Length: 212
Ligand SMILES: [Mn+2]
Image (cartoon, rainbow, N blue to C red):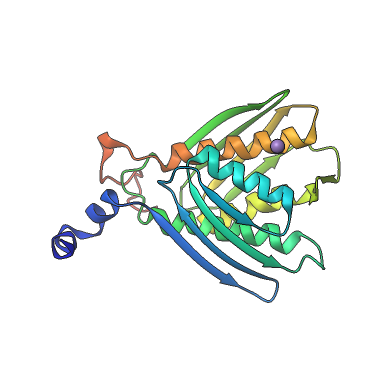
């Protein structure tokens, strides 16, 4: 069977198997091990050392339908910046790893998501280029145990790791927990769309450039 799959080449093999990304990322500031299954069922085991950040990553996995195992041991005695940014980078890299040459996927996705009184929009393009715009409308310095100024740093890290465009915006809202959660859920569902396989465009690269 494996010989037969070899003959079919990588494209066919990738299209027929689960898309999994595995990242081990160790620096003097953070040690991260991460396993992502893009074709998962929304299961998660997440430990970043920041409980509210875990809550958002768990929400991302659940709403994206991604299976996510993530362990980060970061220098939280300094502050949360390295941990949040590096988890973003590693998670982005895991998507890049899992998606391979990106043949046969939608590539772009967007979503409008409510979280009670808050509403967020997100658009992503797995374009191979990096850009990140975050307008989170947060009005408090901390939510739970998360330093809220780091929300854009997470998305910036992800965009660099995945080499993608991310635009995310809170349209309105009152509660800051809800605003962040609406952002992460909108992002999850936008990514879910972008990663989706497009039966009609099977095995085709969704780019006029011929490279993503
Ligand atoms: Mn919540």
